[in-house]
Length: 258
Image 1: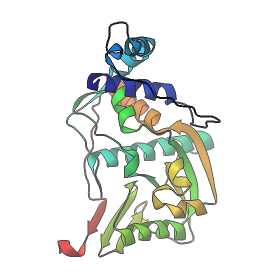
Image 2: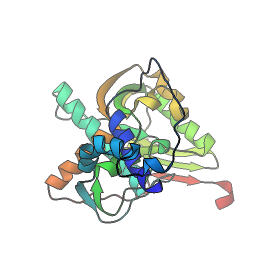
Image 3: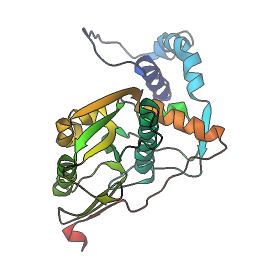
């Protein structure tokens, strides 16, 4: 049965991949997992056969990486890649929706909890991306006053726990925010910042309570995993490999480390 697990995971992702999970009714029952599931014409074969064409398409390489990318706080190659892709996507979205060539978000943020696996070295498939970003998190762009941006980052400092960021440079020391640059400048409490994030965080997930104070927001309707998949495909079509690394954008110094 262990060999069947990846296939069942893929089928689950296919079933719910591009749909919201708004259920009116849930039902369940016990299913005996015996040898009949592994039989050539057993229940497992029936289910797998139904989804096999879609599953096989998910296993086709859509890009390549030079090495495996992992996700870990306070910053990592994969978390930086995810946040940077979001920054680029949201900026392009603003350019197209406003018609302003210089339109750009000021920062992007996603949560480490939403990154559930590593990006493998070598060939990358759509299945890999779905495994990394399995949740139905959509990209949103919100207007947030500088004082609330500061509140968000100060909360990071107090908890000594940050999330994946782009467009931001932070230094946290002994639970205090020692440095915070957004869009290359000190935070202006009165300025309205364009922030790209996911709807889960917009509504206060992962302790991002400051986002609930936004003035307004735009729901792009694009899921995180679809955004990343399209990015990889576009880079591959341009003859580029998927690369990322750490650049010191987030530094957390704890008392015991001094």
